[in-house]
Image 1: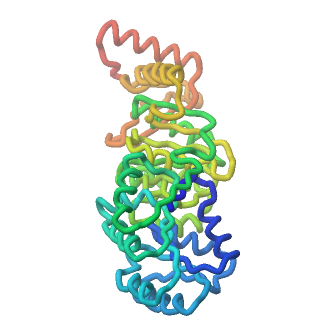
Image 2: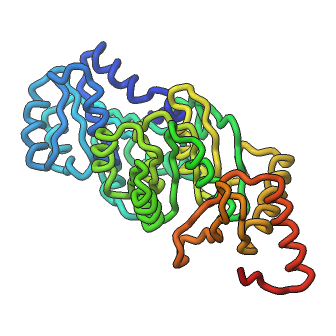
Image 3: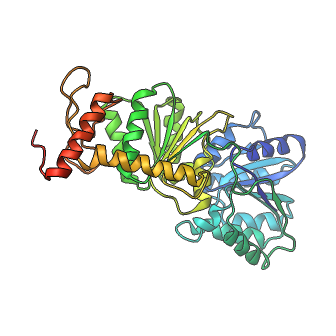
Length: 378
């Protein structure tokens, strides 16, 4: 069975209730160790709940698992080898296998995490009941899944309570065409709202490292998370539960529970609809309103908003970025020249709210340069 429901719907909470109220033997397989660790800590009583940390521990836990009528095993596909699955078959154990974040079996399992795909196919050919949990399943992936299941499964059921939908849509959508305008808006929000937590998705690991180092130099509390470091991130988040901003790659969009997020920034256009829904779904998980800032124009935005956003972004790009202007009214002193570039030699700076006089100076400077084609040497 494939169970689809929006992010934050409570799919894993349903598993805890299932274990508490029924006498079942369940093996829960997570694609990330951080998700498995977090899920294990959510159980109020752990008498019959097991979570091995190594393959050696897994073999000992399986022996205890065999002797129980009611048990819950939480692990990852890398720790559950083929011999363990065959032992369950030999003992005729009535076990239910649950694969969390099921869409990653295809997205990751067919690229760099082959063990996800191999374990799923191995379990399907043993005759055990299999339950897949996910918030998103694109149509081509769904058709491929049905084709693959014909090889080893007799029956397939789909329970769709909201595929590729959000439990709570963004209160405000801010659409950008230019990267530097997007960065300026992010720095503006970081400077003006100091008591909330933001989530910033980066395309590359180096971008995460850059932003974390940049704000740490300014002694602002931020955290970073990249692929393979999710468990370390969860440990840091436990020590610092309310950072100003969390910078991460798309790995943090899959199942990891975060504190209340008020603004989500995505600094690139995500072409994968499943991944995009997962990232946006990190906001509003507790019913709170959140804003979305990004480059994706295919979701949540009307044509009117796209046109207005394009005009605003274009004007800001002309006035702020293409020409390196000087602002003279920052805190009553002559302002610094602003150069927002991650690759530049100068550190990024940001001038906050501007007055009408500053806007007039900016526009006048732009028109002067357009007329005479000279550079401002000041």
